[in-house]
Length: 153
Image (cartoon, rainbow, N blue to C red):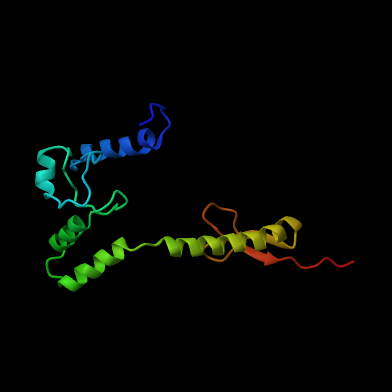
């Protein structure tokens, strides 16, 4: 771990861990976690800090969702739901969305590359429209692009 004060660990992770602890959440350090080992259960994990041989039930470090705990929480919060619905919820909450985000980013990039030169050259103008449809420069107004009418003469 870096001793520099401007690391993700110092600026984000440690404050978040501290906040969760203040709010009464159980926090554990997974630095010494053994991967692929069965999870001993939350109470066993909390009774001794993560040490050699302890596991949160993950197969690899890249698994960010503790699926067995997510499933248990969904079942506890939704006791009337059938097992298939819980499985569908777990699948939806844990599915990889990176391809969808990549596609959306590509669309935004194409739109930017199409509109920016036209905006800078004056071919189109940008104006904001409020919720009631009137032109507005207020924060939160929706930007609209309109094609400029060619000048006569």
